[in-house]
Length: 385
Image 1: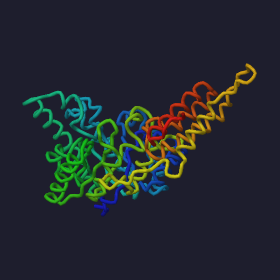
Image 2: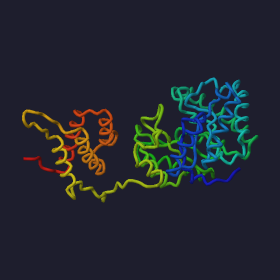
Image 3: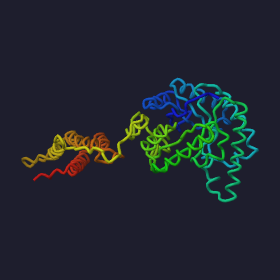
Image 4: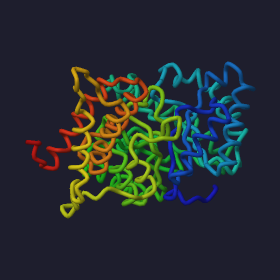
């Protein structure tokens, strides 16, 4: 078995997958390297193998080659519990699956880029298990256990040096399958620090009991109250290897997961900072920013007032140019954003850019007024007489 310091894994899930063009892989993996990530977890699809075995293996080979070139280790997921067809875990399906599993692993066994094999992602996260109860649930879970035990046993027999795990939906699912794996892998999207603590503490107990390393192979979800900076701070605290879900803000999960946009910009710089071990201060001695300490807030409000003051001499109306208005609006926006006085899900600076591209003077004036008022009230500036 290859020796590896699993606590040093700083990984990411990559749903775009092994079919991604090489130039895109290099670009997006370059983003990962910028923030110190060193491993990638991907899903394989048996149906792709069955449809065109040669093309599938070629695509996978090119993917692994790029990872090796960019010094990223790889965790490959052989089966996906999320999309489970219950027929796929019946015994009459095992023989065909054996060919798939053994050819895939055999093609990469001993490859230094391969960190480990995830036999199945989240075996319990599907309607087959979740919508069953009582005796039926126990029977279905036993059937899943038989499926996993069969393939795990064959893999360990034929490829004893390869590292095997199962990516469980939560730490409480791990114990029934723990003897099958070399590494204990669980997912944690807990919404509070105390719940995250409980997951890690349970994982560490199992690690000590079974003398096996642990990995949190999926974490961080904006809509589950599991912020990237909080979840990552806990992972650093417990010195645990981990995989963010996920690298890219794109596709189905883009509105609740992801670090980078395709152009290399980020949704939230605190996520990139947290990946590098830099975290927001939250204790009582946080130093509040004073936006008008040097008079800039007052100056920005005055600049907006001047930009919105129209000329009406000799019965001729003339508004200031849109760039004059947007320059003043940007002054306010930068103060509001830098001093964290506004929500950043749609930053004022992004709204300014949209208006600039549209050339909409009316919208520019409206936004400039809105931002100046926000800044004035936040800084307790008196309105003009």
